[in-house]
Structure formats: structure tokens, C-alpha cells
Amino acid sequence: MKEIFKHENFRSELQKDAILAIMKGNSDVFVSMPTGAGKSLCYQLPTMAKSGIGLVISPLIALINDQLAGLNKLGIPALTINSKLNAAERKRVMLDLKNVSPTTKFLYITPEQAATPTFLDITKSLHKRNLLLYIIVDEAHCVSQWGHDFRPDYLKLGNFRKIFGNVPCIALTATATQNVVNDIISNLSLKRPIAIFKSSCFRSNLFYEVKYKDLLGSPKDEVKDLLEFVRKCLNVKPHGCGIIYCRTRDKCDELAERLTLEGFNVKAYHAGLKNDVRNSVQQDWLDGKVPIITATISFGMGVDKPDVRFVIHWDLPKSMAGYYQESGRAGRDGLKSYCRLYYSIKDKNTLAYLIQSEMNASKNKVYFFLSFYSLNFLILFHCFEVLNKVDNK
Ligand SMILES: Nc1ncnc2c1ncn2[C@@H]1O[C@H](COP(=O)(O)OP(=O)(O)OP(=O)(O)O)[C@@H](O)[C@H]1O
Image (cartoon, rainbow, N blue to C red; front, side, top):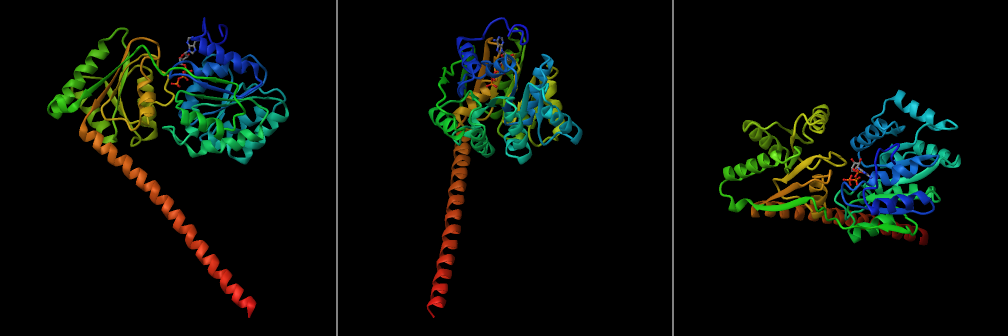
């Protein structure tokens, strides 16, 4: 840990326990630790201490790239296979993996990649050569429909994992309500994970506050309140940066414009921007060139910036678990940081309407499938009847 990762101590007893359990390598391990608690080290250290490769499944290519950059900076050979690689890059990774002693220590992939036959062949070959150390599922809550980031492709990981049943599977998440935990264990086919680490989601350095927009006066007064708060947060020492979450792209742009007019250095981030613009906005924020970002929730998963001094929700978040993840991006360096949520009845009603419509849409989908299948059955029965009559004749 000291030599490679440059950490003097474990961050917590929990981190130490998780690392030791994974190190044993004889069972599946479920790690549930708060945001920013240092979950990556839990699988990275044991993988570095042994010979073989840690296969890491992660939901986003951007997240994978961040992890690779961090590991490569430490001189650790980590590679990825994903849909964005060009032919030459892919060939380089494949060649290394086919080598008798590959240099790769970590191989990061998306769940979509795990489902491809080519990748299955590579993994089987690594497994046959005793090179597959761990199957690591990062952001494991994506496997659960109760989780806020549910990804259907994560469900296929259960089968993938079953093929390599004797390789320990490590599942990591910060979201661990009982429903999510149950789903993770069953959907990933974890075999009696002997070590389930649970810890409180309480982060003592984060200061939470709810502001009632309706009590602030006109929309102008609401923005004034926001500006004051941002100014205050930017003055907190040591200086850091912040995120303002908005529900829509337009709001992000609008607020960024407003803050710029007030002299703040701010940029908007959302899915409406071209990829290269979005990446450069994120990079400028990570490098500290632009301290404030107004963003939709598409921003932030896996962003590991220690000095985020404030996270503001200008609109109500869609779920409690989502709010925990988003606000949890503040204060990862353990220093005092502020999370403020602006609440209004109108906003709550809009959100309730959206959630209700989504629920109705998924109900309609079920009805559609049911009626589709019932219709098929009716046709089938009719055919049987006709055939029967023909047969009898
Ligand atoms: N033992 C340690 N000592 C000091 N710093 C540590 C230690 N372990 C991890 N860290 C640092 O803590 C930060 C957060 O770690 P990491 O990204 O693994 O968090 P996480 O638990 O995965 O959070 P999230 O769920 O939000 O992704 C990183 O900058 C990492 O280098």
C-alpha cells in the first residue's frame, strides 16, 4: 500500500477488513462503503499483491478511463477493452492477454463487453491459464432495479459470473438498501459472500440543508440566495469547487449564463453538448480551471475530485438514493463541505407527475406484452382447433 499506492494507513478499519477478506481469495466478497470511502483500493491492493489479473466491470467508459488514468499514474499496467477502442489498440490489448505472462494487472470492461462471445473466449483462456484472479463488479447497485442507476446489461453478469464460478467475485457499492443488497447477491449469483461489509452512510463532514424556494420570494430572490451561497462556499478554506445539479439541460445553460453574468467562472454540462465539448468541460472542472459546473445528473458518476466544497440541487432529485450519490461527491477529502437542496411545492408536483407517468408507461408496457402474448395464444389455439377439425375429417 505504501510503495505502490502511496497511502500511509488504511482509511478505516472497514477498508482494512475488506482488503484482508478479499486478499484471502477463497470467497465472494460484498463491499458496501460510503461514497468516497476508498472502495477501489479494496480490490486494487489484493490484485497487486498476487500474480494474475483483476477483471473489473464498470458501468461507464468515462469511469473506466478515470480509473485507468489513476492506475497508470501509479505505474500500474491497467488496460481496457471497449467499443471505443480502435483496431490497433484492441490488437495490442489482445496480444498482451494472449501472452504467457501478460503485463496487464487490471482489465476494465463494460457489462456490454462481458456479454460478447470474443470477450468470453479471452476470459476463458485467462481462466484456463489460472490468470483470472478476481471478477470485480464496481457500482454493483446497477444490477438492481431498486438501484438508482439500474442497467439491464448488468443482469447478464450473473451468467458470466457462473461460467467462472470458482473465481472470487467482488461486488462494490455505496448504495446498499436491503432490496439492493438482495438483488446484488442473487443477480450476481454471489455464493454465500462470507463477508458483507455494511457501514453507515453518514458522512460527518457534510452539512446538509434544505431551502424552501417558496419562502424566498420571487424567482429573482431565489437566484440571489443561490448566488450568495455559492459565493460563501467558494470562500471556504481550503478553496475548492462545486457542482450545481439541475433537472433539465435548459436550466443548466440558463443558470451557467446567470452565474457568468455575476462574474463566476462556470460552465454547463449535459447530454445536449457534443462529446468533445462535454469532455473538455469535465476536464476543465477536474483541473480546477473552472470551479463551478451546472449539470444534469449525467455528470459525476465516478468523478473522484477530493475538494468539492459544495453540491447544490437547484431542482429536487428524483430519488433518495440518487440524492445520496450526487451530494456524496462533496468533501471526499474529509473536509467540511456543504450540500444544499432547493425545494418547492411546484417542483415536487412536477417530479411526482413525472414519476407517475413513468410508472404508468411501464404498466402499459406490461399490458401491451400481456395482450400481445394473449393474442398469440388465441391464434395458436385457433390453429390447433382448425388442425384438429381437419385431422378428424
Ligand atoms: N488508505 C487510504 N489513504 C488515503 N487515501 C485513500 C486511501 N484509500 C483510498 N484513498 C483515496 O480516497 C479517494 C476515494 O477513493 P475511491 O475513489 O476508491 O472511493 P469510492 O469509495 O470508490 O467512492 P465512490 O463510491 O464515490 O466511487 C481516492 O482519492 C483515493 O486515492
